[in-house]
Amino acid sequence: MKIVIILSVIVVFSVGIANAHLGLEDGWVEHVPVEFEFENKQYEMTFATYHDSISGFEFNENTKTSITTMPFDWNEETVQQLEFVHAEYYIPKNIEIYKDYKIKMFVNDFEFFGVVDRSPADEIVVHFLIQKDKLLEYSKKLPVSTDKMTFAISPGAKIVTESGLSKKTDDGGWLIKVEWEAKDKFPLGKETPIKIEFRDPFTKYVIPQITYDYTIEQKGKIISSETKIFSQNGRDSIFTTINSIGSTKLQIENINGLDSNVEFEFEVTKILTKDDADHLVVMSTGSWQQGCEKINACFAPYTIVIKTGETILFENQDEFAHNVLLEGETDYLHSSTDIINPNESFVYKFSEVGRHDYWCTLHPWMKGSVVVKDTAEVNIPEWIKNNAAWWANDEIDDNTFLTGIEFMIKEGIILVPIVDSGKKSDGTTIPDWVRNNAAWWAQEHIDDSSFVGGIQFLIKEGIISV
Image 1 (cartoon, rainbow, N blue to C red):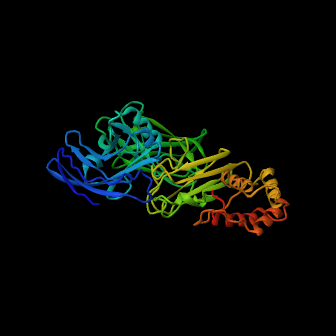
Image 2 (image 1 turned 90 degrees about the vertical axis):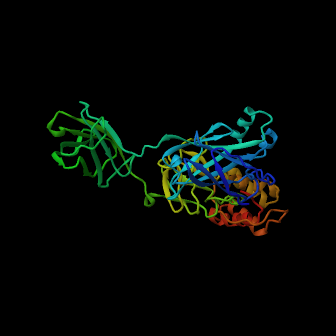
Image 3 (image 1 turned 60 degrees about the vertical axis):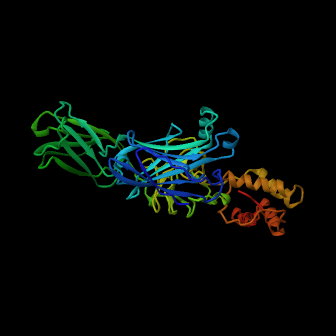
């Protein structure tokens, strides 16, 4: 259903309401174009709902707030059935009240911290992804009579686009700004220009006709230095290569022959690239829609076992943006950005031993895990092989054996490449050759890889669910 609504200041409309989807119907989405007037200009944006048809929209010209309303049952029993509620605003970048300002998000007047994606060339995507625990929290605070959910956005503080390090000189006479391409990290072993600007500390204007000296020092050793450098326009670049990691200092001094100095401290680190990655995990094509979780294929492989200190390349092969967040953490693994766009990737090093579960906050059905071990050797618990031997000799039943195998896969003790299971187990008989494999594997007559072939067959047939 496509609805176009033309509004002036504050106008509310009503439409017929479809049956609530409870966020459970795979692939259901409704895009509703909405128009509003602000300062005698007409603007259009789109609201996408993945839960139920919307029932109203309003724009408040005084507060510059857009509010979309959707029928919603806040009863705790109903909320318990949900995993999340998902909705989005698609805002063209010609709407300046949102383009140039941070966007504040609210759900039924509760401030909500979602994801604002500014990476598309022509629009801003504001993601509301409200998890069950947050829905339950809101339901306890709202009046019992509440029968709707509202999604509101309003402009916050103006976005400051400047990046880099800025400091006043010790005498307060200059404001010096330095930056380099990698922003938060200085790359190891790569010639990198450090851009410098000399500004008036009050007006912030760049001041031309500058002379200065500089020194780059690390652990008491001078890496490079130069004196009496002249900058015609007040901007300059120092090209330098630093071949050791650690805390590094840049000192700029004797500006225009005066005793005017400033010191910057930064970290030199190895910037990981695709070539440094030991393993690959892909965000699968089509994973932006529910369904991939049924075969644990949203991230592929679903579980991966690596050694301490090894790196993983996470690559987005889907047509929509994703992100990667460890369970219980608040910072994404890709710390420099909130999202990974299609065909983009990042590399992350895992140093802590244990199981690390992660998910995409934009599409919460997308889940995966990394198991980090001290050694590359896979130590399979003895009870698993005992189970295999007992099962091969009919001393335990099929379910007991399969439970052990499912545990082994889910814990990353043994890796099984994901295969598509289009079937559901319905008392399917396990072939004799799989039983023979189990006996030979328990007696160490065949290796793990040979045994895995049988496990893949059981997954494909729907006999094992992982």
